[in-house]
Length: 128
Image 1 (cartoon, rainbow, N blue to C red):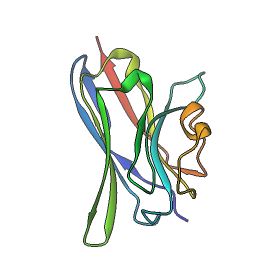
Image 2: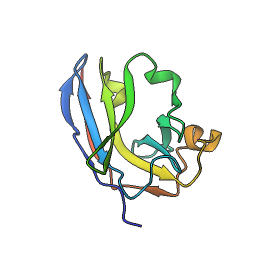
Image 3: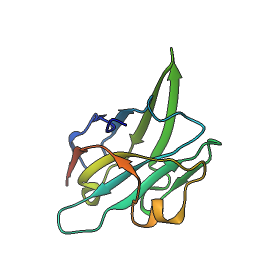
């Protein structure tokens, strides 16, 4: 299967917003756990937001109330989004779209951002 491809990263000031997107048509919605993970150099990858095959969403504590994960299905194309509001400098990281062939997302998906498939990532930089 092809790697997911992310888009939408960039540089913003603290308090700003960005919306990331990722084409996930290859990962049939309803049979995959989909999510966004992030990583900074020298640190472990961590889960940010997940959505499972039932549409149940989970968020890391550090983004609750600020980030929203969603998926759209238009003309047979599935796109995964991450709306990021009230961004903080500590949100600066490489963000990766990820997919795991499990109907339910697991603790491993969130705790260490472990997924079978993930994209190259898109950089998000937040200035204070």
